[in-house]
Image 1 (tube, rainbow, N blue to C red):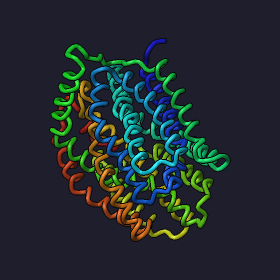
Image 2: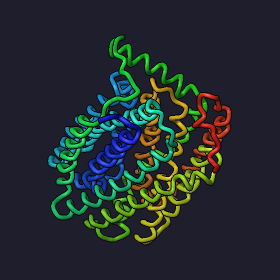
Image 3: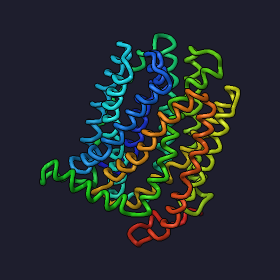
Image 4: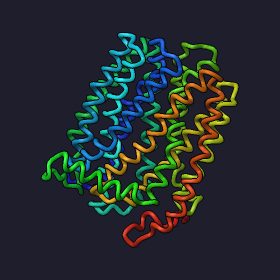
Length: 421
């Protein structure tokens, strides 16, 4: 079958949908696994922070693999690794493992995710550039947000009700099966287009070369660096909210075993994410520059997190959380298009992985810190603090806004063309 930009986009969206369905099948109950093992908020979030730490540590090496050995190779490695480590996660639950066992499994689990990050997005952008796609990247990324929302809706709702009908370990086994299926599908349909792997210098030398060039093209460019730094606090609080909103909703409901409620909450957020993807282009049209879209998103989400912490009833809390998901989904395509417009193909996956590394670093520190706040003062106060912390990202994002115009060159029209129509 001939490779066309339409086929590439369909493959990308299909992989996003399947990946999200598999990954989110335990989202409704993942934190409860650790609490069932007897971990406190602080210990559970410490284990989760180790996942984030592993994500940060392995982002660059795995991103370099995608830029040297190929995006397809990296994706398949991610599928295989996640399948095996999901089973290890299930084993840790069965054995009622302690915090350090959970931490070790979480680090290994993170490695699987790092093979995906950067590689999938780089595969799409390279192929579309090679096939001379004339549409806008934001539209493709917005549709990916819609696919993510649909996958999250099906996965989280299904996983929560499977857990309620059986136990919290069964969704892990189903996820492992879905990940195995995803790996087989990717092996059949995903092939590098517009990118030629370079391995002649040897794997270690290739990784070192790509890493050096990626630092120069990523961190070394102010227009990229400030947007990366602006995500540290937003990502850190995002990790915390995603993990702790489940026990917080159960406390508001007064029923620690209302797993179905968590499925409903996850489904509402998934629907909101789908709506955010649908509204992404309309939201972007309100602003002249992509960095302005990002700044507006930070302000809105900060206010929504404060409201979520102050909400005293489940319906209001779920509505505010849904708005938070919707805003995040509406903003992300602009950020993705902004970064990809500034990155060269040969270092694209590594720089995108470096971006994930910088974002993840916020979660490493903030999750146990906010978890301690929750243990001492309660979940509501920790969410209010999370919202306030969002505002600290504004200074660096305004610096990025200043550099967006300076980044304008004839070779990078996608980055600097005003977004108003």
